[in-house]
Image (cartoon, rainbow, N blue to C red):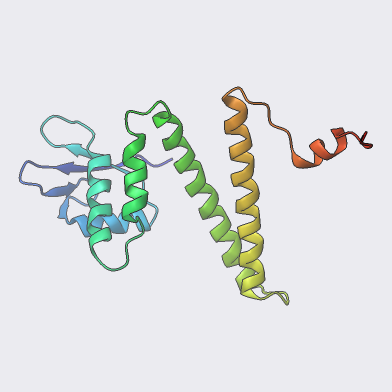
Length: 166
């Protein structure tokens, strides 16, 4: 396994890629991400990990250009989770959701490459239905974790009395 690429950040905000022994731009760092490169950004003086800060800077710049991914409402919701008892859970949930989305996107691309009589809308509907199932499962697990029992609708129908007394 290759060593993680180290990028040093200097006080003058310049970034130095130790692998190629050259200064790079924030756009170059974004391209490393797009290319799937593993790297860390370290403060040149202290050695502190600045990777998250640089990633957030890239997101900020991308959000200012073109069509943003993160709506004001979504950002507000995320901010509300800071300091909340669910803060740790939310980060994990967002990460898992993004991983699942990326896997589904890859599946979608593969299916589009070999379209076997399905329309793109049919495939999107299947992915949407799968996302809804996962979301409903997540909500059931969340409510179960808060002390409320979870009962699937089909279980409720089986357990319901079959005759009524008038």
